[in-house]
Image (cartoon, rainbow over the protein chains, first blue to last red):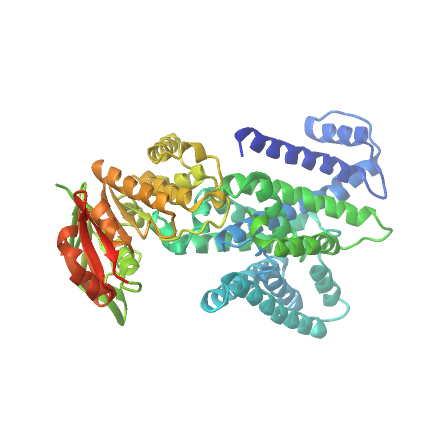
Length: 338
Length: 256
């Protein structure tokens, strides 16, 4: 792939993202015209004084603004985490949801809700749960040496996911049906409908704390796609690097789960699409993957709140798109991820 | 002559399962050591010990005079380049990206390769004559092309010693010859090269010295003519072999 076609991939996906964002602001039960949108933006950014209907301004700034920001943040974070997991486990079929990270993070968060903890503790619970899940899955996958490592990793993730699901079900059963159960259900279904600016402010530093190390290590990440011996012979202390990347990717997943609950498939689908466009080189792949992830979730969330009279949980839509994609990937295994 | 790789009374293997012991080895600039031995004879185990990927069970390894344990991973990588056996490409990196990964030990932890690293990678690509492949992806290369890419990556490490684990395994006849020619050329440029093989004739073609490993450790070490004899090969492989002179060198022909 040449430099020019790489530039096209970046520019094209960035353009799609901007158009989608404009569309997301415009569409909804209360339509906003493009000129209104530009006027509100100009008022806010450049201090101009266009006359805009206050209701339109409220919709853009208070209702749709935080929700769009949340979709961008969650989409980018899940895609970045998926890209890191896939490169690190040398495996194109892993993703935050398949590795059990999402379920672990959800259990951590549900525990926080169950014991009526503060938002920060719920966030930390999500992180700890995610980290514990990925650690367990990796330990099982690494120790079951007689089987195909890819298969054992995925199976370990599925089995652990089932166990975590049972624990979550137990907590739901025990939870207070008026206060806690709706909160828990909302989380597990995954939604951006009730995102507040406060949620964003709380989760953004976690996402950033995960992104910064991934970005700094972006070139070195490539070495994790080699066998351990090769990477070490090339001068990389593999074990330390892997721990750093697992923590960073899990932090990003937990931040995303804390905002939106579990939204599956983004972390599996998007890194693939990005890799098909631009190749596996991580320092080029990471930014494109994040832009595509943000655009994808924004599109899904906009559909979720506009196509039907009631909101469809975005996780339902990503599953509708993701399942056939995964099956196709499984059928064409080797070729598809190269 | 600068000693690049040295082993003293080296015991190698795994805790509780020694593979070889009391190995003495000294390899200088321009020398090529061919390591021969049966499957499971410990060739790869020895290489992993020399590269510091496996802890020595006894004795020590020195690289350019420095004891291996005292060197950080990146310092080892700048002293010995490694071409692993049967590299399996998982992701569709381009040849250029793969060779650039050889520069890891010269790139800061949080940095990407700079202009000097890119130049070093290009030089390595040119040296192996694979410039035309630079933008191809490794998963689509033939076995021979991939092996040349891996050697280029080892060269890009900037090390003056190279360890190649069965570099001709599963290559066709022409590519085997090309890889051996490359080994001789590198030695002529002053590299110290260690490679393992299943074909004793390759030692006559490309090596200045031979280390013959049997199960349980080193059996013989010396020039190809000294070590590769019908008797030694019978001892190690359990088959009858003719070692016949041909055009100033020798070839090994099994007797069926």
